[in-house]
Amino acid sequence: MFGRVLVANRGEIAQRIIRAARELGVETVAVYSEADADALYLKQADETICIGPAAGAKSYLNIPSIISAAEIADVDAIVPGYGFLAENAHFAEVCRSCNIQFVGPDPETISSLGNKSRAREMAMRAGVPVVPGSPGALKDEEEALKIAREIGYPVMIKASAGGGGRGMRLARNDASLTSGFHAARAEAEAAFGDGTMYLEKFVENPRHVEIQILGDQHGNLVYLGERDCSVQRRHQKVVEESPSPSVSPALRREMGEAALRIAREAGYYNAGTVEFLMDRDKNYYFIEVNARIQVEHTVTEMVTGVDLIQEQLRMASGEHLSFTQDDVELRGHCIEVRINAEDPDRNFQPSPGRIEQFVAPGGPGIRLDSHVYAGYTIPPNYDSMIGKLLAHRADRTRAIRTMLRALDEFVIVGPKTTIGLARKILGHSEFLSGEHDTGFVERFFSSNSAAVSSKGS
Image 1 (cartoon, rainbow, N blue to C red):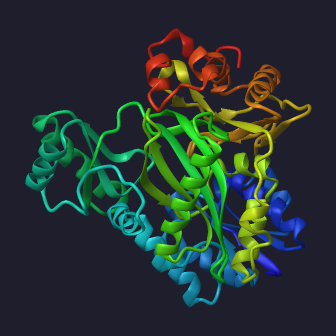
Image 2: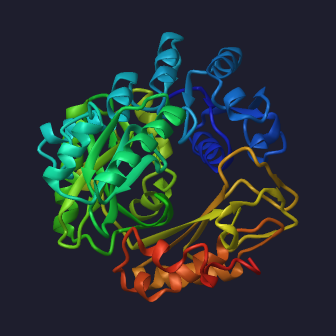
């Protein structure tokens, strides 16, 4: 096991990594920007190093600064968490060239899976269902039109290097495909420096189901059940749960084995997530692999009892997986709500600023992962998520009731938050029935609806 690691991230995931490492007896070095100088988790790390000003490009995305900090602190490994440099193949390669272990897959795997058209080709070679579409990257607009006419509209234009909903456009006819192709490509070039596009048939009203995988460097791979992430807004997840109300034990096994076939095809190790869309007839289609730990990894931790961050550290240090597939058992039901500093009444406008009062919920079955506190000022420079609230109970109905109770207890005074919206989502009849899909939030909780009001939260 490593003796000392650098945490190349911020917020709740930095705190989560520090906690996991401390329990393993591993020292932590936390880097931070000037905007995060008063972050609570900095007091929990063994050492802290400022790596630059608030702008992410000059701090958390500044590879030379992070590598310099790692060398000064004499660490064995760098833990990237999610976001920032977590799926940056160049960064992983720089770590390797500096003899610092990158806690994640190798650079070649990150590069291959980060290109969604190549990942799609990999899935097809592994015999995993994919959404009908282009076999690989599109040459030009004319090829996109030809394929769209063959498979039929509607179709989704996607950036090969995309993520977070960027570089994507829905097209329902030739005209919208032509305009959407150029708009998505320009957005992808600006966001990712890569304008390569591919095309898929648009699956109407799907569910979003993902499989958590773990693999060590000795060829051992396991899947840890699924997470249902169908409650989304503009391709950003809002609520996650496990197990999915739409997945049977037999289907779980089938999807898990499909995920492992893709992982073996990619030569994958460490933690990752294989994402699928599922239609009303329970047909599932591969969409992408996230070659990192996910925000919602905590849901899987609650139902399996596996500390995924500690497993990441063990596997990156060369240890074997500490359990086998036969040891994996889902216990109870877990629901996670993302708490964002946003104003749902103003089209989810970010709401940075000072937290005047912070009263965290508690009680049986509740877990809160958050780096904020009363007196903390949320900076305007980063993602607006300020916490993840989880409820774990014996079944889905009890988990929902516990979550609603916890949301009623949760008080944040100062910035606007999505606590009020979360209450309404979990109390909605479509969510309660488990029949919701990825269009659920947009149908019932649009920015123009009074139902999204966060007043009092």
